[in-house]
Length: 81
Ligand SMILES: [Zn+2]
Image (cartoon, rainbow, N blue to C red; front, top):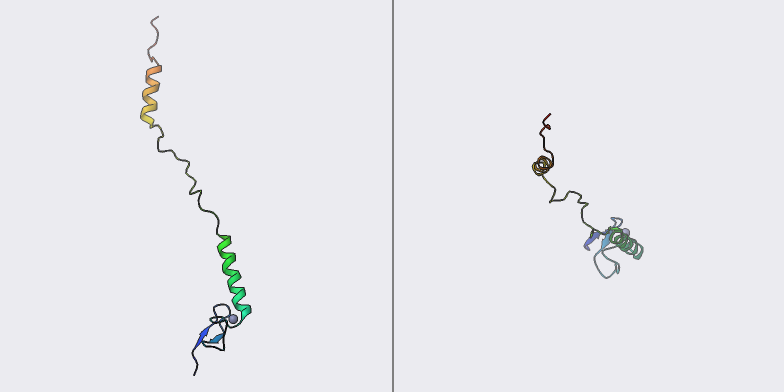
């Protein structure tokens, strides 16, 4: 009883031996189709070099600093009448 494997493309049993030159695929067609799919998959991978979109700056001014700046410019004292 010859050992058989499942064709990666169509799942049909393929005899693992000299009689199956395209093993583990059942036929040249399945091998080419599967190879084509694999190439398409690899080509379809989008370039991920840009990285995540980061808008938040780590050097954002804190609200405390903003308040201190306003205090300096604003006298806050009503002019004597
Ligand atoms: Zn097949």
